[in-house]
Image (cartoon, rainbow, N blue to C red; front, side, top):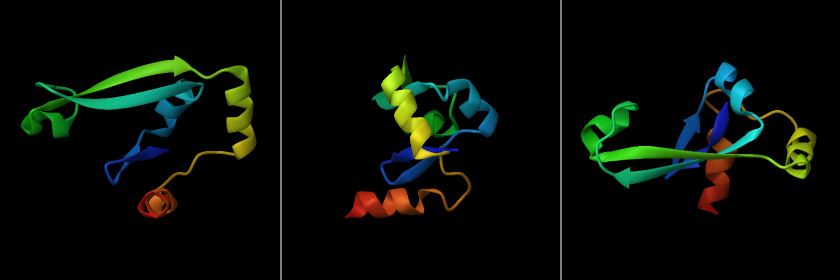
Length: 85
């Protein structure tokens, strides 16, 4: 499932993970330091911090009305196009 695009790179999570987190807004940030949970952290001198909050009932209704999230390797195409304009 496509969560979004970070610095021009699509960011995905697996379908099972999405089912667990679909009611939650995830904010992923990069900070200096050493990490050990993502491969990109190992040699980059940075680590990821994830913060979350549960969507409000209004936000959940809006997400449901928007339909299912994009999936697959081409899911980010529209997201990347929008960022570039």
